[in-house]
Length: 295
Ligand code: PAF
Image (cartoon, rainbow, N blue to C red; front, top):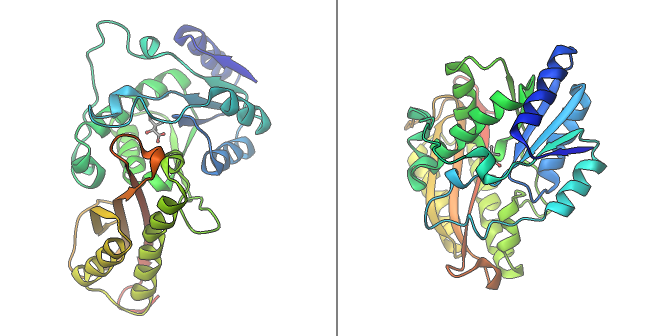
């Protein structure tokens, strides 16, 4: 496995891979790998000639009061895991390599970024879209693997690919969970045992929602209230609970078609949560509602 930090060298490499007709499976990451990341590396490995992972904690997607400085990092462990998963190249640039002095052009996503995390974290998706556009330019991927936990991010990146004519296929891969049901996230590391127990409210709320919908409930307001109640009772602070059309992220009163339940909640973190002592976690599920029938 080769680690590349220079933008120029990375360009030479990907150009040469392309010239030799290789397919490039690309996984963009911010590091601190867990099984969710590894599942993306494995799929990229199965489906491509060459696997490229980027490791860059992107300052442009963090707000001023967010956890950029505190974001967990462990480069040595990350590199070991990449080697174990037979990743071919890790692109790990510095901040100045990605944003040299004078950098001033940003990608502003449209409507898909206006709600959910886009509303709670102003500027977040502008930072994501900008770095992803740069990474796609450099990596020249054939297929990009993204995790469904960041569902809104996946849709925004798909739209970016369509709008900017990137010749790239985006594959959204399933959420990986702990046996307890907790969705894997690098930010789970902020949680102590008590915090982890409270964080289970997110998956509990999702399971309650899935069961109610399967039984035939279609009233979005009622379902949202039920989900909120579960999160509140567990001692988390709800950031948002939304039930939306899964493709356009538009709201509706009566559920129909392909639907997304998306949640974000602040969970008391314990000592590891830093000064603010709370962790913002997200989770979601997608369901298909057959016309006029039960699931
Ligand atoms: O999902 C992430 O880890 C990041 O948002 C991404 C896509 C690597 C861009 O920095």
